[in-house]
Length: 261
Image 1 (cartoon, rainbow, N blue to C red):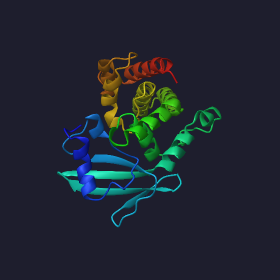
Image 2 (tube, rainbow, N blue to C red; image 1 turned 120 degrees about the vertical axis):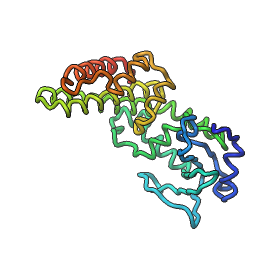
Image 3 (spheres, rainbow, N blue to C red; image 1 turned 180 degrees about the horizontal axis):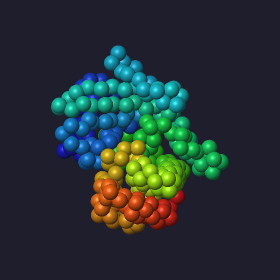
């Protein structure tokens, strides 16, 4: 993880007084946690506490929780921008309640159930690197695994893929081949996301990492070379795009049938 130990990750935070007393957990998230970062990447750290931390330098971002905001801090160290987000334990409990099986089976879980920051938190619990509070992290990873989050993500991506396929078919029939091309590409991205989410590899809201996510699970339903061929539109003929579009839509429908919701 960037060659840093947990203490080395924590040192810049502690030097700035950014780790509150009694913090329940602290963990690195995002590209640095996955080994996908580059020299221009920011470092992202989540800290979970039982009480709100307020400082003259902290910012806030809105979330549909109680309280309805997250506290944040940002600084530069070692030529990197560091972004620190503070979650309250009660907010984590609220998010997990939104994707409980009771909520899912009663139809209360929709594509709008979680906002981006809430989904980011749940998506990153499994791939983060703990700095403090391993027991808290393992307990909440287990809660996440027992929740309906995987099904929520898969069903949403499959629904988006189906909508995009229908759009592409209608656009093909109307002779709008340019729009059909875009819809086919969207459909493929959504169905691949569903396939990866079914295996616990989340992050469909960040398509730039889709190749990395694909390699992380290596799904049996489609090999990387075939995936990359479609992702990069190899074989697409701008003068006659119909065959490419139809092939992609057929592949999307085949893959969708092989995804476990």
